[in-house]
Length: 353
Length: 78
Image (cartoon, rainbow over all chains, first blue to last red):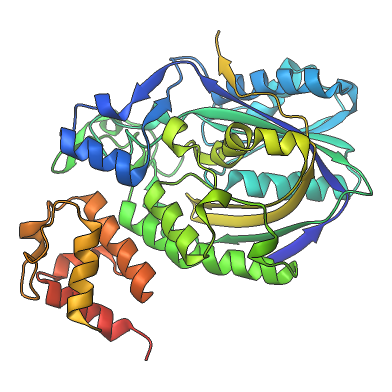
């Protein structure tokens, strides 16, 4: 099991951007009113932000970074690491991180690359950035995690369309000898790769005319092979099987207990999953914040978006012990235990072109 | 596993279900509107209360409350 600790990495600040346009589950007339009510109650999504055509995850992340850098007062020449974690890059080629390096005016000495992970992306991104900084590659880093999931959901597929929302985030990290340790537990099970998949458009199944054909999958569910497919029960059972042991091993590794954690922030998969996990871990609701109701499942952005929108006050004024746990597409999952101390965190930004 | 307790727990999960309607031999798809959310609600309850994981296949192959109950029992740790 990939259990490890990093030292000297300080979370200096974070910011999040969401698109302006809102969609309400109550208005999703593809399904009956009763189903909509059940969706709001059990899946937990009331509204979602949907990016207009042409607005990308990178746009949202860059807007967040501009605001954060302004507030942090960092010298951009010192930022020598930029990681962009997303499954909705600007182009198939080149890596979006390269474009963003230039847009933000970061130096040519900056390492920049993309990571193609979704739900688990924030935890993986923190571990990657932290490891590279610990090796001395860079003293300051930006970790961007964002997705435009609504681009690939089919309106006539109730398993995805009313669930996903768009968002982009940035987290600023700096090397500081005095920073407390960060503990990680990262895992993968690619046997379940079909549980969340866009089948066509990559090298395995090249895009063809047939890729666009809308097919009936089951009663009331239609989509093409360029749409995101989600096997709800498979993802549900995977989450319930893997997340709790992962979190418990992490706590043991870090010699911590759940009582010592101020907040447990889950990937905002859906309310049924996260509430079941919360009960299994015996954590009271007050310590498990949600952004799901307002923003939906925002893929990799969901953990940092939840922190910015639900814990901003606590993050900016005090010291917090946080356990972040993210799981999904891949199948890939991981948890991190970290301490924050009065970080810079502007209010969530609404994107306008 | 006590079937009455199991039925009571199902009744608590589904608002539409009037107490007393559900019997061990009831075909659950006929009393609960069967969709993916309700399947997840049932799976979540069984995982939380009995620490047993039911798959999509388990649900497809189960017809009555009794069928589900025996699948749970066969997988519960002694």
